[in-house]
Amino acid sequence: MKSKFIVAGLFILSLFSSCKNGENTEAEGKDNVSIVIETVFAKNDYLQIYYLVKGSEWSDANSVSKPIYASNEMQTVDFELPKGIIPENLRIDLGTNPTQNNVTIKNITVKYKSHVVNGDFGNYSKYFAPNIFVTWDPEYVGHKLIKVDNQYDPFIIGNDLLVSKLKKFKS
Image (tube, rainbow, N blue to C red; front, top):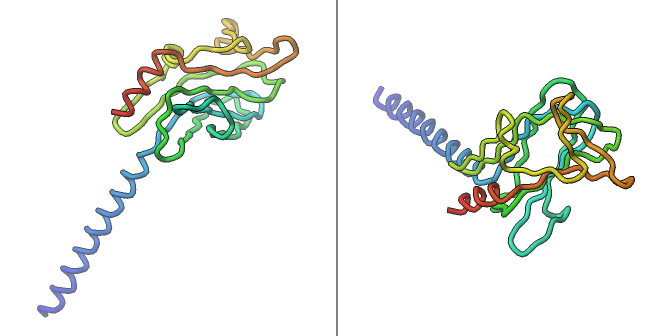
């Protein structure tokens, strides 16, 4: 009888030990900077996030991308930067499909551990500025993606406010 209690006690102890290890693994996964984008793309395309690190320039080597599937519904796209990367700035390329006319962005939130740059409900525009290929379309109530001199490279880039917020991620 006493041995049954010991076995049961060891079993319960191993369960608590397993849960504790699971929590550590989850916490370690939060060591990545993550970017959440809520958006509507009417046509299939790609979103690509470039991250600027000290001593580098914007490059494909310092980027992550995901396909976006056509939908008239809001979709959430989650990105994680490689572990250990805390960017100095971010640039979000809004696709490569030149037939993509409009894009709606509701939210761009950047998270790292306890730090959050909350861009929900359009507040992302406080942290990102569009380039010449991205204009505001009041009729669509979203971004219009355009060609300029027969070129197409729409993106939004972090401004000084985003850069200052990202610096706090290092503290």
